[in-house]
Amino acid sequence: MTQQVNVAKFGGTSVANFATIVNCAAVVKQNPATRVVVVSAAAGITNLLVKLAFTPLSQADIAEVVEQIKTIEYNILNHLDNVQSIEPKLIDLLNEVSELAYHEEILHRLDLKDQLLSMGERMSSLLCSEVFKQQGIPALNFDVRKVLITDDTYGEASPELDEINTRAKAIMAPDLATSVLVTQGFVGADSNGNTTTLGRGGSDFTAALLAEALNAKSCEIWTDVIGVYTTDPRITQAARPLPELSFEEAAEMATFGAKVLHPATMEPALRADIPVFVGSSSEPEKGGTWIVRDCEVEPPYRAITRRREQVMVTVKTPKMLYAQGYLEKVFGIIAKHKLSVDLVTTSEIAISFTLDNPPNSVAERLNKQTIAELETMSEVTVEKGFDLVTVVGNHMQTTKGVSSRIFAAISDYNLRMICFGANPHNMSFLVNETDSAEIVTVLHQSLFE
Ligand SMILES: Nc1ncnc2c1ncn2[C@@H]1O[C@H](COP(=O)(O)OP(=O)(O)O)[C@@H](O)[C@H]1O
Ligand SMILES: N[C@@H](CC(=O)OP(=O)(O)O)C(=O)O
Image (cartoon, rainbow, N blue to C red):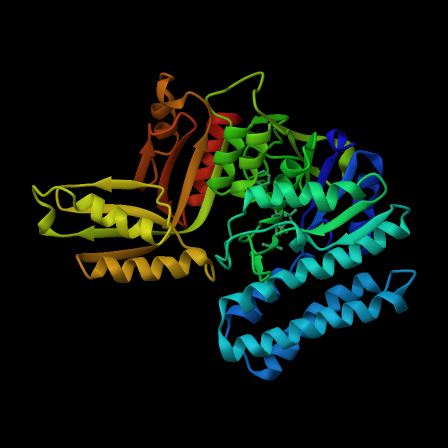
């Protein structure tokens, strides 16, 4: 039974309202192997929860945000056949949101923030499972916290793989013959049972982790686009869907900003060799992208990505001149705060590197702590307003003419930092945020059109 399982994940846009959830039900019914469904919060809900968790708000402000959440959820609830029996459950969850928001406002605790952020997925799985039942699917709302065990890094928790594998086989697998388990993406629990979250966009990662734990034969990511495109179709209309991608290419694309996939999604897929499909829940007949271990073709240029909100940190000190071990000290501090650096350049007395800095993220908080610590040993400059543009492909550092073609296409723009050669799959540049959309468009024209 478990060998035939498909895990299907539906993103926030796919579970945004009753009509889109009915589309999801049709997708689930179309594939009898789909026995686990991972849902995100309805579109817009997690942003409202982030507002409750991270912005100082008055009681009246909190009540207003909760009202906005309620409107979105009731829009779905009111279409159910059994409103009376489900409404009390939704009211309980909405009351939990209010209580958590009031407590968080006073206590500012990271565990409370994660409990708040998890509420969108908890409401979503309740309502989606009811819509699915209404559409004839034997759906069961399943609390993922029984299985998806993580460490206690609130906001960006890491999965405990052995525990997840054991629990999924023991708790989920036996029900799959008779039920379709509808569960929450993005949410987990630490070993003490405290709620954790996997980082923004983490529902894709949940789907891949459950697929791995259940020895699934495939994992589907259903979203609002008909696959992974050559670049974000919101940047240029010339972007086109890719029929096929390798795990490595997809991982590079996700890491460097293709929001359609969470960056960690490919780790379980690669480990367990599970093909990942990306398609549109409103247009499933249009097909999508298959992400697999080996692709038929490995082109030098596959896609272009953009990651916003980058900061460039320059650490400068004359002590570095002819000194040894200085880089080790700087990177030791960065490693201590569990940050990952993308681009690095060094001179005799300075090191510049980039950090991902999205607002209200764990990374932003850790960046502040890291910079404060670096300031105790050196002069530190922090520059904002940059985006990272990346060309993803294959054998890039050993194929003739790759860099010259890319540089020729964007010769009119100022590149602040460049990274090439460390990896066969990418070439990245740090550019002014005001230029990035144009740079992506121009590069796309030159490489793909
Ligand atoms: N290379 C890409 N291919 C497809 N979509 C991309 C790409 N890069 C960015 N995106 C964006 O990702 C969006 C889908 O991700 P997201 O909004 O998180 O969906 P969901 O709500 O389903 O999780 C698309 O609408 C698209 O604008
Ligand atoms: N709801 C969470 C997790 C998630 O994965 O959402 P989506 O699938 O809509 O990107 C977020 O907004 O971050």
